[in-house]
Image (cartoon, rainbow, N blue to C red):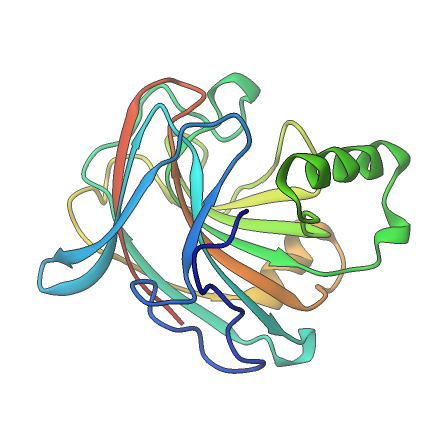
Amino acid sequence: PLLGAGATAAPLGAPLPAPTQPPWHAVPLPGKRATRYAAGRKDGRAVIHARADGSASMWRCRTRIAADDLGLLRFSWRGDALNTEASVNDLDREDAVARIVLAFDGDRARLSPRTRAMVDLARMLTGEDPPFATLMYVWENAKPVGSVVVNPRTDRIRKIVVDAGPEHLGRWREHRRDVAADYLQAYGEPPGALVGVALMTDSDNTGTRAEAWYGPVV
């Protein structure tokens, strides 16, 4: 139920297709209104335009890239306004105008009993297993660039702040990240295979609105 019509995984080891093309597809989150993702143009670029209205969902591409093949990740985004009520460090205000979400495989036998119970619940609600670990790059209001934030609900989701505050609003932000190094910083161990990449703009926890534009993810 989480896959759009005709959605398939990106070819093994191949570059990701543009976010405006299949197999990128919408992924709803249980009990949440869906953020709207639409192909368009912004400043002469082909983009995915994300508009959240008290909502949270992802625009995702399945893939499988072995840990040894992980290199630099390049992405770009633009936001024109921040949700001043949001904070990725606060359980009740955990929203962000822009995120890049990386999903990783791993040894699930190492998960704690509590985490395994959460995995079972997620499987029942969504029809698929959640990743072994998730690393997010986020645009945050207050925490400084470089901060690593552990998700308030589960330590299997960790976030690295790559933009902070209003300084760069209204312009494109270009980022290059060493995925393996960032995972090591966030989790204290090397990553497993990369099994998914997603864009995410959300405002469900604060009940507000958020808008962002995303360029290619390479």
